[in-house]
Amino acid sequence: MVPEIREATPDDMARLLPLVQDFVASFELEPEAYRSTFQRLLQNESALLLVAESEGRLVAYILGFVHDTFYANGPVGWVEEIMVQSEYRRTGLGGHLMESFELWCKSKGAVLSALATRRASNFYEAIGYAESATYYRRLL
Image 1 (tube, helix red, strand yellow):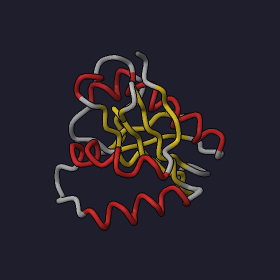
Image 2: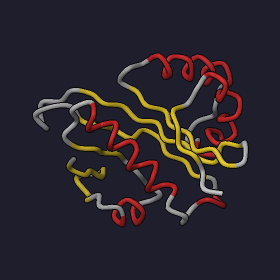
Image 3: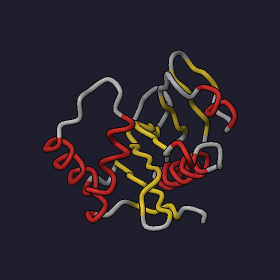
């Protein structure tokens, strides 16, 4: 079954937690901080939290923001986190999440999408991102 990509809802808070825990590598996830952050993100018009659901479970997510910049002559989209459960990697799901995020960025007037990564350089290059300093970007 092809996962459905949609905006996260308050009902996704507990279901998303295992994926977030798998993503976190440099910090220890604090449950109370997670809950309050999740709620704030859903109310933040500059943030987008998308989830991918398959057969009643969340299998991936992307969290990103749009913010104003001087250097790009306008707003920029920034992917903060993207996580795809291991069994769904190399299926195109990550690319679909990135594409959905980029479309949202364009709707907000963003001129590029960027991110920083240590683990997935080949993935981002394969979907059209180019290295720029220590992060990747794609002009929108």
